[in-house]
Amino acid sequence: MPLAIITLRRAWKGQFERHRGIARWTLPLWFYVSVTGVIIYVLLYHLYAPRIG
Image 1 (tube, rainbow, N blue to C red):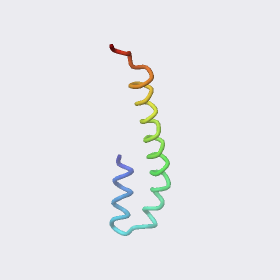
Image 2 (cartoon, helix red, strand yellow):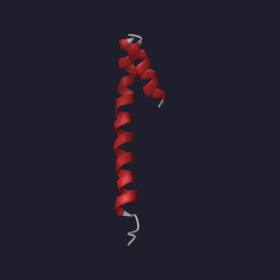
Image 3 (cartoon, helix red, strand yellow):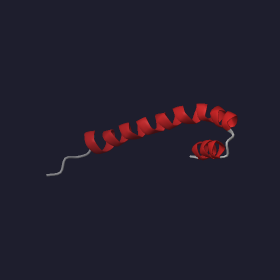
């Protein structure tokens, strides 16, 4: 979360060179966290959840 805030703040202030530098790290990390979060949700609540009823 801190990387996202710093990245957005630098873009907002117009510091585009500094923004690009940190965005190169932020974007892949953000994608990784998003994809793995969805995978873990599916595994926990849809594949391994006990069937009731």
